[in-house]
Image (cartoon, rainbow, N blue to C red):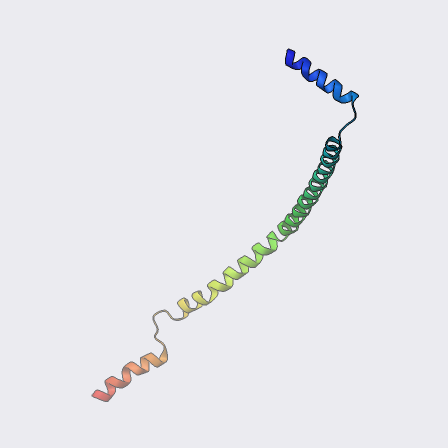
Length: 107
C-alpha cells in the first residue's frame, strides 16, 4: 500500500509541475509513432484488399484454365492413340522390304 501511495504522490506531483524537455519530446515521438502505426495499418488493409481482388480475378479464370488443361490432355493423348491403333500387327514398309531383300540376295 505504501508503494501505491508513493506512485500516486509522484503522479500528482508530475501533474502539478511543468514537463521537462525530455518528456515533451518523448510525447511528441510517441504521437508520431502512433500516427505511423495507423498509416501502416491502413496500408496493410489496402494491400489486403488488393490481394483479395487479385485472388478473386484469378479464381474467375479457373474454369477457363480447367478447359484448356482438358484440351491439352486430349491433344497430348491423340498421337499416342493414333500410333497404337494404326500400327498394330504391321511393320513399316521399309523394314518389311529390308528384311526380305538380304534373304533374297543370299539364295
